[in-house]
Image 1 (cartoon, one colour):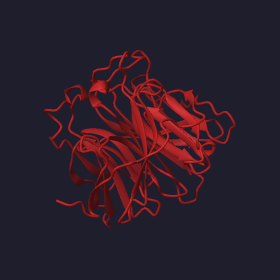
Image 2 (cartoon, rainbow, N blue to C red):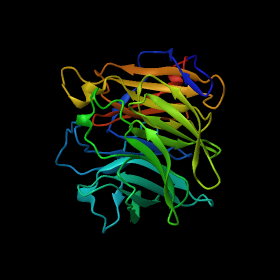
Image 3 (cartoon, rainbow, N blue to C red):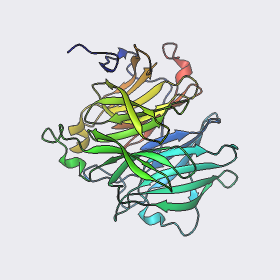
Image 4 (cartoon, helix red, strand yellow):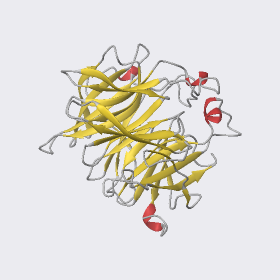
Length: 336
């Protein structure tokens, strides 16, 4: 069947094989950036079937100030009473209240006894997080990523519990995931049949939700309805193993970090490490979206890319278990 505007396969335009002016930073599985350039990063994820280079250390939330000439990540302190020893952060999302003076950070947490969401308030002067509450629900199976839509409400990608070590060719056609909506008043499933649901973000105007399918190698566009349900608009086949998504705050472009070969992630060999790919998707809502490959590495520099976010010409690419790179795109005339 010929591809249509609703369901289309995109082939990326080839750009440079590596991003310019990049330097190593502490690793980050997921990243979200405030409009003024403060980047929040989740670090230290331990996930079944995945390698971990620091198994005895708990996870942390990091802060990277992109306004600095040579930014370095710092560990954010967390208020007393929070069980930091069991902290295992995964997907994150930042929400700024209507007045613009309160910043809330939602973090998917995988302690040993289940999956939950931790809600924090950012304390800018202290550069720390105040733990507000832990959110749990029976519909939380194994949450992956989260998109905040209010001070206590969000969409989240959700999968049936499984070990990534079990995901091989036998499992690739099994629909394991869904998307749920949570608020203190209502919790419900809003999308089904997602082949390992992964990254999720809101559009600039908050009218659409974009969600990635890892094994489906696709990104879906949903319209947000007045009752918070989702109506699927279209699905774009990317032909890459999509992880987290980020939105360019100026252009609305969707930035995607991808895996090249899942078997190299699951069966880690330092002599043959998993590589990394970053794609930029422009005009996602149009009849003719444009997909561009911005970064590619065979694993010699960055292993297992999981997120790529941009701010004012700066690109941060994080990874599931490796490091992160911080790049200045302004030095590359082919990327704008």
